[in-house]
Every structure is written in C-alpha cells, then in structure tokens.
Length: 386
Image (cartoon, rainbow, N blue to C red; front, top):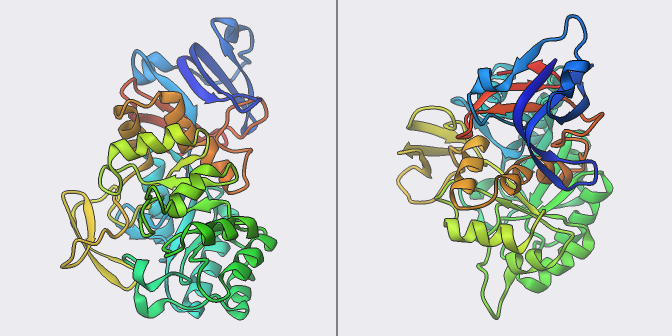
C-alpha cells in the first residue's frame, strides 16, 4: 500500500521528529518500506499495490502519523479491560477508531488472586491481538491517602510473594506503586529485574524518596500531579524530581480536567521528549454519559467527566488519545511535539522503541488524519483496523 500527498509527522531514524509536506509512505509486509516527498512514489508502485491519495481520503491538509500508543488504558466503548475477550475486543476497537494501534491494558487495585486471574486472561488473548502490549498494574501497592478511585480495601503492601505471583504471569509491562511503602524500594528493583517498568504513582513520596525510587530503577511517573504531593518551591515532590531527571518519563492526562492546560504546556516545555500523553480511559471513553464501574467502585459520568458516585473524586477519564493530541495542539503546542508525546515517547517508556515511528523497517502502524486532526483511517502492521 502507498499513501501519498500528506503532511508526514513522525520520528525519524535518529529520533528527531519530521514534519514534512507532500510526503508519501510505502507499506509492505507489515512494515514501512520507504518514505519521501514529492512524486518519486510513482516509480515505486508495483502491480497490485493499493494507492491512496491522502487528499481524496482525508481532505486538503491531510496528516500522516504513526499509530498512537496508549500505555494507560482501563477501558472504552462501554467495556472494561478487566472483562472477558469480548470486552477487551470492544476496548481495542473503540480506541482504534481514535487512532490507537497499541495499548497497555490497565487494571485497578484488587485482591492479588483476582489480579493474577485478570492478567492471565489478558495474556491468553495477546497472541491473537497484537495491539495489546501487556498489562499495567495500577496497584494494589498504593498509598491509602492518595488512592483516588481505587478501593482502599484492596490495597496491600508489596511483599515478595505478591510481586512474584503478579510478575510471574509474564505479561506485566508496567506496575505503578508507592515506593515509600514498606518494601517499596525492593519492589521497584524486583519489577525492573523482571523486565517490567516501575512507575511511581498514587504516592505520598517526597523528593528524597522519589530520588531513591529512581535510583532503584523507576523510570515512569504515573499521571503526573494527580494522586501525589504537589510541586512546591521548597518541596518539589515527585513531579519536581521527575522533571529534573532525564531517566524519567511523565504521564499526562490532557483532558482539561486532570490538569490545567498551562500545566500541560509547562511539562512539555520543561521535559522535552519525556512527556507521554495517556488516556487513563475507563469504560465510558467513546461511550455515553451514565453509570459505570471502575473495579469495585461505582462511577457516574456527567458531561464526559468520570467521578466516584456521589463525590468529586475523578475516576479515570473518558479521554481518547486523539482528543488528547487535539487538546494539546489547541494549547499552542507544536503538532510534532504533541504527536511525539502520543507515539514515540510512550512506546520508548515501556521498552518498545520500535513503535511510534515511521522509519524504514518500522511496523506499519499508521494514522491518516484530517487537517483538523480527526482520524480517517488507521492501520496496524499495514492492516486496516478503523
């Protein structure tokens, strides 16, 4: 397949971001075979190739980017990632329609045995669903005072036995925990040794503890600013330490509710190439307002905002990652920066630098957008998914 006459915004071979007009992409065998500008694509078309004029398919000013990579997704399309195969397929389909080609499915705090069963169930689905990159365990090793929408009764200390049961499933891609808990720093080391990403989040950690967690191997900050001590000029807390340390990537929920737009733009400017846009989507993403559940919690969604029933506590979001990109661009952030934060940056943060890029040989995960950034077509490894 060859797509031509689009603005191409994607990471190049050296990691820098390209923003090129009148570009084309040649996709073969599930990978990017070639790319360029102008009319040379005509010499590369082989008999039987599908040729797509981006201007005809998506209008003037059409944009091509890598597929979006969401490393923090609890659900969507009215379904929860903790459910059965039908639920997971609905979640994947809902986010694919919004430009997401790869996801890390997130599970909220629950008893260890239930989390193991949920993780095993997702692991069994992965061989036939290449869009799933693994599982993100957001808990149960969280601080009670910063647990947000997580069930306090499900929280537990990070004992070696519990960690071994969870990591032994073999599909945990990342785990969020509060490093100040007893055994927390040892847990960070254990997570990293197992090949997963240790993320600091839902925590009371101060700057000193956050630095110790980073030295132990933590490389990700779960939804920066949310469910953690604030940034203060004499007490920088987790956000300040993460901003100052090039080893850390900071998740950002750019839905206009979790963070003020000024804070989002501040983070993107203060930590270039280290901010990952995430949805933290629950079941109500790409679905109507109403009553939902997030783990054991009852959630009410009003005007697109998810809150614990009867409270003002945010319970995940109804954000989709394409809307996050549109929001960030609307805040005045360059398109290339916004696209990087939704593609190459999150992919690299979970150890998949081969994703979120469109260099020669990279997986053919591609989104074709209108000029106003509405996805019109989505391909994963060259196969149309939306």
